[in-house]
Amino acid sequence: MPRTERVPREKTIDDTFKVLTEGYMYIPNRRARLRSNIFITRLLGQKVICIGGKEAAQLFYDTEKFQRKGAVPNRIQESLFGKKAVQALDGVEHQHRKQLFMSLMTKERLQWLTKITEKQWQQATKKWHKRKKITLFDEAREIMVRTACEWAGVPLQEEKVSERANDLGDMIDAFGAVGPRHWAGRQARNRSERWIRSIIEKVRAEELDASPDSALYAMAWHRDLDGKLLVSQIAAVELINIIRPIVAIARYVTFGAIALHDYPETREKLQADDGNYSQWFVQEVRRFYPFGPFLGARVKRDFIWQDCRFKKGTLVLLDIYGTNHDPKLWKKPNEFQPERFKDWEGSPFDFIPQGGGDYHKGHRCAGEWVTIEVMKTSLEFLTQKLDYQVPAQDLHIGTVRMPPLPESGFVLKNVHARLD
Picture 1 (cartoon, rainbow, N blue to C red):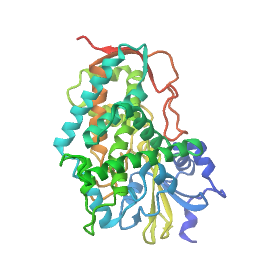
Picture 2: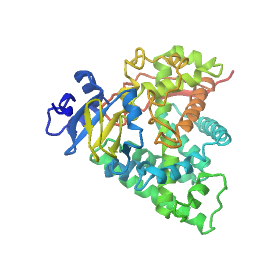
Picture 3: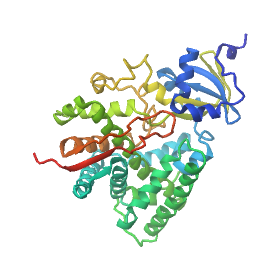
Picture 4: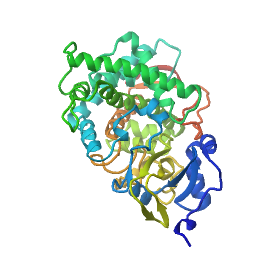
C-alpha cells in the first residue's frame, strides 16, 4: 500500500470556496473530523497538504525541508506583504534581510517604543472627553500609525494621518478577501509604496535627515549580499513591513479591550498588576482571538512524514489558529484564561500567533516583541488611565471573515481620564 493512502484526503475537486466560507476553522474542522493532524486537499487548483499541532510546527520551520519562495500567493504580496519582501526569501538571503529587522529590536529601542505608545495614547485621549462616543478600533489604528511612524523615523503630516491609517488598515484587511476588499488593499499598497519610496529617495539624496538608529535610516542604507543598496522600491516595501504590523496591533488592542469587557475579573487583575499579569493577559489575547489563520510554505526536497510523501514544490499550510486552540496542547483552549501562561515554558512551536520557530534563522515574526510591548502599554493605559462606558452593541467576533473584527469596531462612550 502506498504510504499516502494512509493519509486522510478531502474528497473534493477544489475546496477554495469552503476556505472562504469556513475561514479560520477550515483546517481545525477537518483535523477534528478526520482525527488527524495531517490531511490532503485541493485549493486554487493545486494539491495542498494541511498540517497542525506542535510536531507539525516543528516540521514546518525546518529550513532544510521547506522554503517560502513561491508559497505566498501574488494577491497577498500585492496587498499585505509587498513584492520581494523578507517573508518570501530563503536561506542566507533571508537571514541577511531578517537581521536587518532584528537589529531594530534592541532593548533600548523597545523601551523607547513603549514611551512613544503611551504618549500617543495620552495625546489622543485628550480629545475624547469632548465626544459622546468613540470607536476604539478606528482610534487605536490612528494611534498606532502615529506610533509606528515616530518610532521608525518616518515623517507623518498631520493632515495625512487618517489617510495613512486607512491605507495601512486596508492592506491588512485585504488578507483573505476577494472582490472590493482585495482591490482596496492593492490600491492602498500602491499609494503607501509611493509615499514611503519618496521618503527613502529623499534620504538617499540627502534632502531629508534620518536618525542613524531609526528604521528609516536602516532600510534606506541597507546593502544586500552583493554589497549593493536595496532598490528604493524594495527598501520601501521593507519599511512598510515595519510600520504596517504596528498598525495591525490596533486589532489586538481592540480584542484585548473586548476581553476586559467580557471577562471583568481580568480588568481588576490588570489594574492591580505586579508586572506579570499584563504579560499573561496579552499572550492570552494573542492565543485566544483569531488573527492569522494559517501560513504557507513549499516543500524544498522530497521526504516522508507521518506516512505522507511530501513532494518537492507541494504547498503546505500550517494551522495557526487551530494549533493555538489545540486541546492536546492547551487545557480548555476555548476559555479565556490568562493564568495559563504563568507556567508556560515558552515553546516556539505550540504558541504560534505570529508564526513559530527561531527569530534569527527562521521565519518567526521579528516584530513579535513589538506587538507584546505595544499591547501591554496600550491595555495598561486603558485599564489604569481611562474610565469609559460600553453601550449595548454586538461584540461577537466571528471566525469566517479574515481578518475578523466586531461590526461596531467596539464603541465606547463617556471616555475620560481617570481622576485618581
